[in-house]
Image (tube, rainbow, N blue to C red; front, side):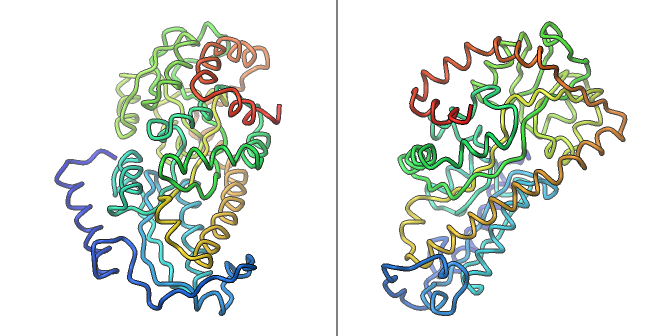
Length: 363
């Protein structure tokens, strides 16, 4: 959502006032209601389940979680489930206020604010917007890594792969709490795509991600970075011919309305990362960390289930509007993979063989 500098400034003043009220100072964390005791060395996940002995060791906090997406998306549902579970397991001591629709600013602003701890403490966002902060996350920009979402989930849940991803976040100053997803990104278009040649010259909106742009160029399309707030109007005015997003975003923002076709390219998994600042996480005691970890683990599983359960409903909404769903043939998919090999090799060079091989371990 695009905002004037004045509006953004007013919003951030509001956020900081709320944070200062909660803590009696300049931090986003509130002063703890009581000094935390040293966590027992053998503490288990029971502490995260809201046991009274654990709750007594938990301080009082109020944090903001930013989501640059509408409330009718898995992104928002994932965020609110996590916040609800943290509240439940802490007996209401650890409060997370979820702010949707980008009211606290863009994903880029959220990344900056989280790291500097100046208002936003958590965020849920796609990995593509984090590459400029943690370049090795470009591994998730690899085109067509898998043809089914379950293989993607198995790959990112693999302990050896996650160890590398956790290190990338820590080195960047962040703490990754988990990955959910909104299935794959697909293409909407006013031109029916049935052959590789059909991509030629199509003006398609992309995020400001060089790997995403390189992918569409490799197919012969004309990628055009654009603020998301401008996409619907640009499709209406035919300033652009196409765009690409997961079904959740396409339906949540009615991007199917000015488009004749949805092409099931399934070219990149749309992963959703739940992050906080590493220094914030490390300041917490073991009981408090356990609450965040358990809530994040459960919210991840729940959010993935929502993505699976909602996809047919999203497709039905699109089809009932008159927009045609166009499957991609196996032959065309293989041609897309072949055309994108230069992008694949460039990403491998960027992030290293070890990380790429770990991500593609389920193939």
